[in-house]
Image 1: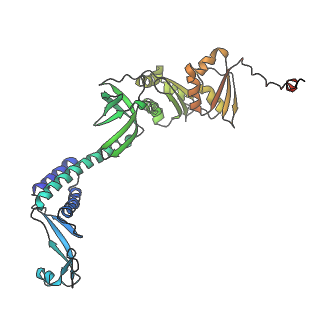
Image 2 (image 1 turned 60 degrees about the vertical axis):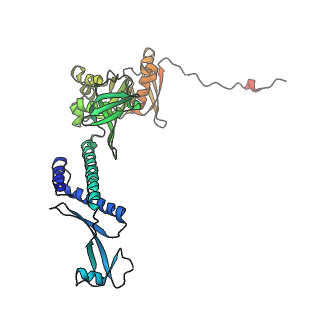
Length: 359
């Protein structure tokens, strides 16, 4: 090892932001382990690195004993006083025990430690950079597609959009850009891993937060959201100001705000409804665009029986039950939909004569 080591450490500190003291501490620990591994276990040794010459030496500590029982940890008084006549029994003596071949091992160890510490620092820096992006959206570029997995580039890192987090209506092509929702940022020995999604409801929420400043300012709140990715979403909003219409504000002038969200979702329909603390009113709003004739709420069972015009029953239910299903998820209530002309059959009375047996 030569003085070039410290020039290298200074360069790493300047360019990578890794303190050379941190690398030196890691290097000393690694050299102690390398010494014990190659030259036998010594209970108490330390490594010294000369900052002027870059030289590395190994020193062992031994206790001065009247009778030596363990030569690895003890030294006789006679041998100790050859080093320094002032040593007495019980004193700790530090002596150099650097093997002649240790320089080669030290060079290999230093290289490994520096590379490992640089990799760790890069992972830490990358994690710090992305750790606050959880539950946020990022712009990703499709780089390749492998076995239905979409490989994405997000700035200076990569991620994989797995099939369960994809949207069928998205036609993923190499070079195409997509907004993705960051579910998790994980730090592991293999590097920083971003778990991203195009199907998560949080994507719709964050898109509205970006498009509608009143949401970011806290004037409008997103109370609930239900989504069937690629097909349709329902979002319930409320206003904290009497002067601000939450639905109209989210729709925007000439529908510009909601249209921007729909375009980013590649045509997925979005229903914006007004939230209410009154379950009947809230469910009525959630079932739009269908009209509600009457509604009966069972608080105990959290069930509501809803009547709609006969000609709007299919609209209220939606294609394959989608509108009613999304409304139920949005409100958290079970919804029993019927047309207004529907008449429930009275319970059948038991025919006592049928119970008689004929002789």
